[in-house]
Length: 172
Image 1 (tube, rainbow, N blue to C red):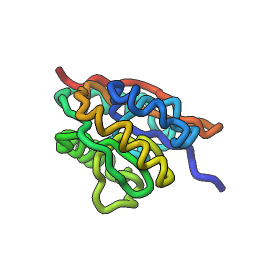
Image 2 (cartoon, one colour):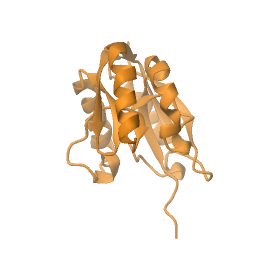
Image 3 (tube, rainbow, N blue to C red):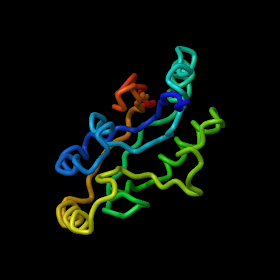
């Protein structure tokens, strides 16, 4: 029996699109349609469980979360990925905590990591040459100012592609 299709919650970082675009080939094909983002909570609920009541609750919760500015400040290595690091990271961590407190059955990354560091993925499992190229290409373009103004509910499809399901505005 296969696992149910899942949803997730991400903060889109459109300002990073020009930085990340050249490296899309280094992302899983299913994730490529999504904008660059910081994951707020993945996995979230199974697709069929993320119903209208869940969407209403997300709307209520996020209406009290102020939009915030941040910068992508550096390229880093995180587990098996090359990532961009947002600063300050505390608002992202607080958003994850808020969502996890509301849905305790949905620990970030399924509970796989003791500490979840906010990040924007540039490439998954890059070669050493790609890591060097990513650092050389992106570091001179940082810091990059950005704003977190919404959260996107994404869902897995039967084909494995992730797609946007709904956007939720943050306050302000």
